[in-house]
Image 1 (cartoon, rainbow, N blue to C red):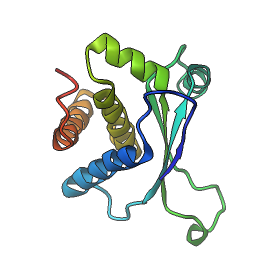
Image 2 (image 1 turned 90 degrees about the horizontal axis):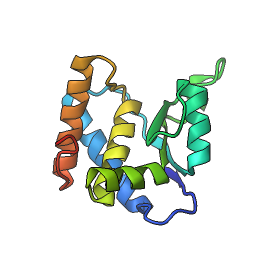
Image 3 (image 1 turned 135 degrees about the vertical axis):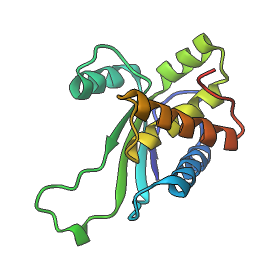
Length: 155
């Protein structure tokens, strides 16, 4: 996993982020994950102005958001055997995560863990558009975070 880091304080280190991602993959695999699991992903930590642009460009939403996920898509016409398996990219806005943690009365580390878990689940095909899907995703998030020693982020 590659980690691109903005010049932000209070950003978890690569080892910790890798631990969170591995916990997601292990939990998802024990449930219903696809057979040919890709092993590579990128986590980018960005400034607010970049997240505003990404949120507008890809979600047509104004303002920054906490986390965006971009599942890997192989370039058209590229032979599959030349492509390294990849899940995709998780992009996290450090300033938004910091502000949300304070506003929600959560520890910063717990909120970071939640954002990485949430973004990784999106790369694995989970979403929260429909209520049933949201319940399934949130249940898995809660289980992964509990395994890591963090409280339910939704309570």
